[in-house]
Length: 80
Image 1 (cartoon, rainbow, N blue to C red):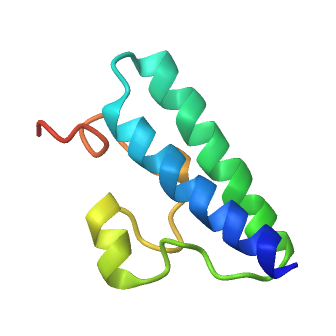
Image 2 (cartoon, rainbow, N blue to C red):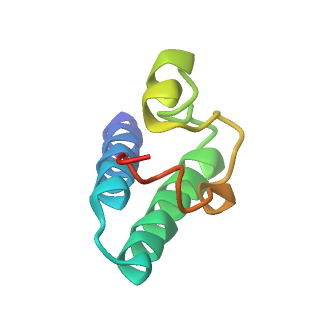
């Protein structure tokens, strides 16, 4: 179980980083869908979100309770 939790936490972080680097909006949306999927799986296991740590969440521009789909286009764009 611990291995699953760490896997989903790692993948959520990796996909969030990839979403910030996505060149097109469809690519960004696909990445955010994966983030949401991994966060849902973590919630089902009652495991903490990798974005629950305020410092880490701030680095990604999200709060621990915010859905990945609640972002605006400028939130994920490091150029803004």
